[in-house]
Image 1 (cartoon, helix red, strand yellow):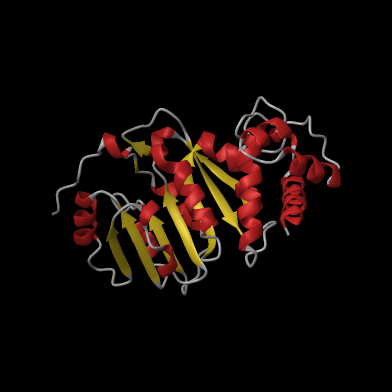
Image 2: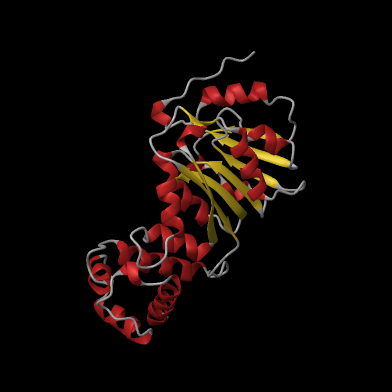
Length: 267
């Protein structure tokens, strides 16, 4: 019997131990037999075994070499599994088939960068089922004007339709983390045009500039990030957005309209 690797604090490892949560994740994932699943952080394989029994192909990336070796032994009977040792942030996403379903238990310390990385690959990914820190989940689905609404909210809702599926108590993991987790489902494209990379670039620059200095007004924050004030004022006027507003009060649609107006200035 393979030796069970101990959790490594440096990697923020908290292993899922509750089979009921595994069943709930599989239910919300709504997998089909022909699906390809990309699993980030399979850990000790709580989800991996179940995925291998349900889909055509499972591509799993794990940063901990000891866990990769453990999974190679304990999952040897699954010929649909492809194990990769490495960092999910550096994974070659262009090798994934279009429509790949992402299922992941994201480590707390790197969850936000990984979410942004996955959102960048939206043209490859059909949908995502992500388990992450509850606080991060709340930020992803937050509404304008709320305390949690920010850059992550806007980018997530610009590129997908997110919904919080359910909360996962800390007691479902070992070692027990200090906070609860939540499972978030990200499906489809809510408001972006996958064929317009140039607009994507402008949109991201506008949103990052707007949220760079949250306590400042929209125009002052963007200006401090290098935007020309004349361009900003013209775009704000065209979109009927008060320059004295702060970023957290703008809806995703208002950010899209503002980015379109800014882009027109450079054409």
